Length: 198
Image (cartoon, rainbow, N blue to C red; front, side, top):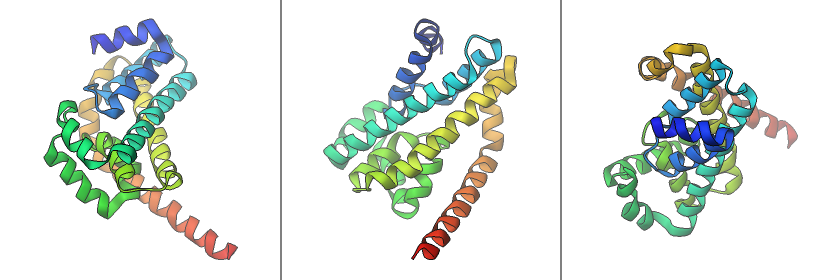
């Protein structure tokens, strides 16, 4: 975390973008801790909330898009060969692949909140030939919700920002359930709108 703190201190908002791109593609960066720390910087007045949130979103956007492109161009053999070097074990890849086959769009939306899944799900989207428009709709909405949640948590917790792990493990199930309900409500509304348009 000390290195991440130095990165943000020296490069500011650009440092957030760089760190999250690396974290999403699989580098061993504690993304939630980083985002919460950014929120703490906002609480301290060292950063502004909106630029910090947008920087985090662009970092997540860049990382997940790069992962999608790599998955599309290089396929599953690449993920199985190089995944372990980025702590993506073959068992984790296989488990996420099975989940993805059942819950693709939902997993893209809430996968950021599930440790180990956010690093793999974008690769699987590319590998499975997901259309970019479909991938983008769910992945980018999920990225924004994820960044917003942890930066806001860091800002709200203030000096207690380091306890985010405890709060998150306690309330993560509720957060994921809320996201799924929100997604289902949005999807139902979207389907109804399309029926009326026809």
